[in-house]
Length: 269
Image (cartoon, rainbow, N blue to C red; front, side):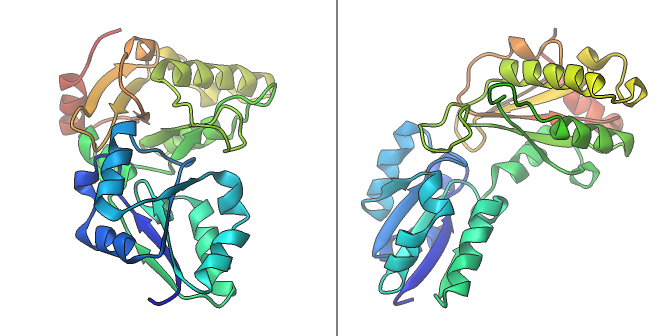
């Protein structure tokens, strides 16, 4: 490609999981940008990235959602936007690709290993039993949406597991360095959502009475050598310490094999 926009997935964290195609496409590009707000690389991997592909520049939310400069560069040169994980997992990147096509630019998409698929694989749960995935946001001032809880409850009503991605941005602006939500913070936010859901008229029958005993699988630093997977419950999730970036799985009822996997990772209350 002589000019145009490339969206390149670089894998979930350890750049040993970045594909040969992704490395070569990035190296051959005239400009390389690392998207830094929907997901992040571990700091020690950022230097490895430069060794692999050459110099790169970080872009945050405003430059991705208002991509005038990216598209301008792509009219006369090859521009690579590097995305942690898989580029098409976020609607932000889908929108960017569509804007480039609408502008008449050549585009290319190189997929990468996604933490969302790794989470399901490493949980020991059956992939076909997952419902809609959910992103759990930080509260912004007095604003706390309950829609993530509604999606979780809808999945549970259909006996489906829920993958919960944790927010990286307490400000909601996507400009500052990301702050990774901890499992303890995630548990507290879910309980606040329950309170607000009930105040807004949500039926208590929709909520399991023993919500604190809901099973939870915590997956930390997926794709890294120190990746950890453990199981607990909503009451005990605050006891999960360490790790850099996390996601949760809230299982519905589990079959015998799934339950054995869950029990084998259990860390107690």
